[in-house]
Length: 286
Image (tube, rainbow, N blue to C red; front, top):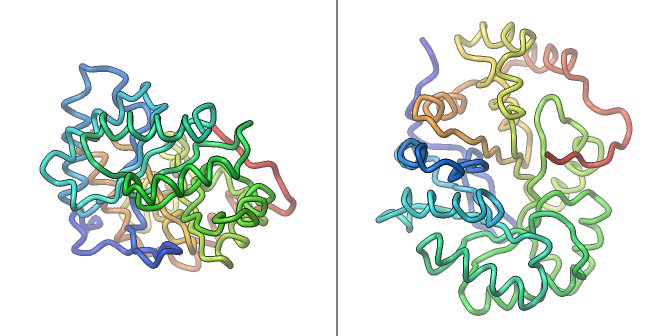
């Protein structure tokens, strides 16, 4: 039988704050770019919520705020079920800029708080100033937690060395079978400190869904290559996967990946097909 499409309970992972979040979330990159797709995108997110995928990730950059508007529609009447993640652009990461961006995101999202607010990537504004702005937003109740995205190990070291820098809750990075660079030092560093990695593009924007080597493993589980790629990411310790799915069938397939238990043979075969890094590589972004 194929994996179940309605998991009764989704595995969770603990943030440094002690709060738990699902290891599978819903990404929204590129949602909101075409109004003709709006209904399908909203329906996909709602189905994900019905299936227990209650972490939704968005950003002010996505469709210049359009993604946040899609999320607002999907969240209507269900806000308390959701762990909501959004991001501020580094160009808006000053004290005044963070406050303004957050307030604009809150308006587009139709909510009074963001559960986890991330700096989208390192920028020119001093990190200490951005952290101070995040802490001010926390005190005001506008955000509950904050984190970062696209930070490499040395940047994370700098961050946790700042006053209040240890309050970082996650680092969202590009991570999948074809992008295993973080495993060399960033992932172990993060795991040791209990700071989860949030893996975006866990199926490499669909490229891994057409991979013959993955299909060979998938055939053992009556699953798809994309589901195996996603199951592999979720099997990594301290990692949350946030694939985007703008169609309901895609959402069901993502949810079903939760029920795939990869074997030692599967992991060995995947390591041969997608070797882990043997040296430090610069953090990749797309």
